[in-house]
Length: 200
Image 1 (cartoon, rainbow, N blue to C red):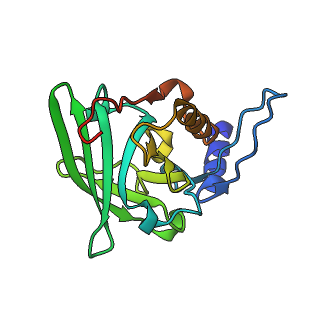
Image 2 (image 1 turned 90 degrees about the horizontal axis):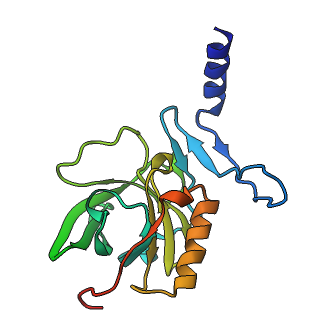
């Protein structure tokens, strides 16, 4: 009973809080603490304050991340973002699976500013079920115009995006290391194949 009461109290205190990230200290075994937000249902990464939607629009190439669904085993994975008249963003995802091309169109809707000033969206595609979490499922954690680290709620899926289809391997490794520093599970990250693509 006391444990349950304590957990309830801790959950109440944590709800809605943003927890600061601490720099890692390689001389100790203390794990990193990553900036996050809890809304009573799920934990969310904190979006990068430098995010700018206008400069984010256009084509991105996924060079690493967490394979899932249609991207598992796929190559030439891209995402193109274009602004809709109503302020949402048109999402066009493409990939090549074997000899077949895959494309799916969805919508990214900016979320309430409680989740961040920008860089946090709910992305939805036709025929896909609603997310369990009420908040964003696409959070730009780190953004530097020519590359971006994007996470989902509870750090379940990672996208490492580049404006260049085949950036230097050392750059991809550095972005993976940054993603891990931002809370991603290193063991779940794979590099994506961007060779042999159309318009390469």
